[in-house]
Length: 120
Image (tube, rainbow, N blue to C red; front, side, top):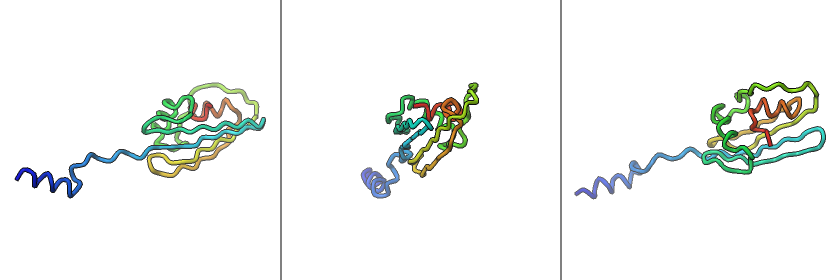
């Protein structure tokens, strides 16, 4: 009779391990007024992709709950030279759609204000 509880467990799916959160995959792009464009893929949960600092970028986004507007800027002085950098992020964060777009005053501010998520 020991097999009946096991069979019941399998039939109800109640004995399976909890589902892992969906992976987070983002296409990050920057474009500046000099015509330079950068684009990387960032994957978190598990960490991967082509971002040069993917471990840190995933940690920053995890701390912000995947919300780019909640990223804490790091302490760094930047020049006041206006050379706009447009930054976008498209994809999913733990199963939820992400569509983020902003313009930073210059590359230094883009790196600082995104805590290096857009540093590529």
